[in-house]
Amino acid sequence: MRHSPRAHGRARSVGAARDGLPTMSAARTGRTLQVLFWVLLAPFFPVYGLAVLLLALVRLPFRARAFASGVVGRSLRCPNGHVNATSGRFVCGTCGATYLGWIGACDVCRAPAGWFPCDVCGVGIRLPWVRG
Ligand SMILES: [Zn+2]
Ligand SMILES: [Zn+2]
Image 1 (cartoon, rainbow, N blue to C red):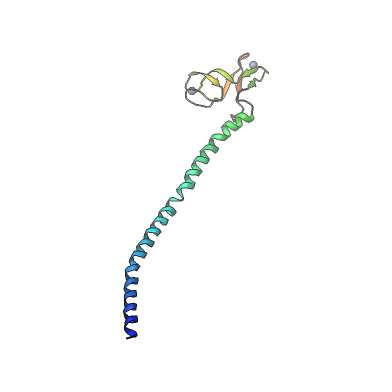
Image 2 (tube, rainbow, N blue to C red):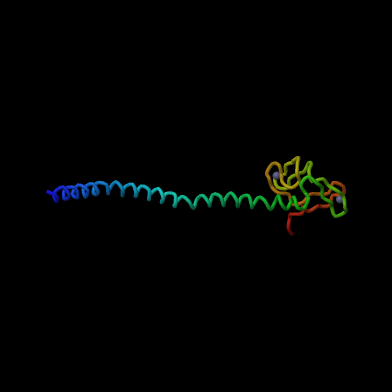
């Protein structure tokens, strides 16, 4: 009499465990897939961040050099010492458009300017960030 309820209980508990097992493993598989999804996706977040950072870094030197050389909003001297404003009316050497604004980049086609002629003597003034 003592043994039979125990045996019955054990049998029931095994059955319960067997029933519970697939549900648990399914939940674990679902969680593993979710983790896998994020693990697979995770590298793209730094890549996106890196791309944004690289774009900012690529754009920065041009502006930084322009600022460092004092071109932005200031003036440049020609080889003869004439002071020329770096903002005003310029003709783009790339697209040929006349644009109003900063000398460094065409307002129409965004092409960076390489040089501009002095207002007084016409001698070419090379922009400080242009090499060669
Ligand atoms: Zn242009
Ligand atoms: Zn000059």
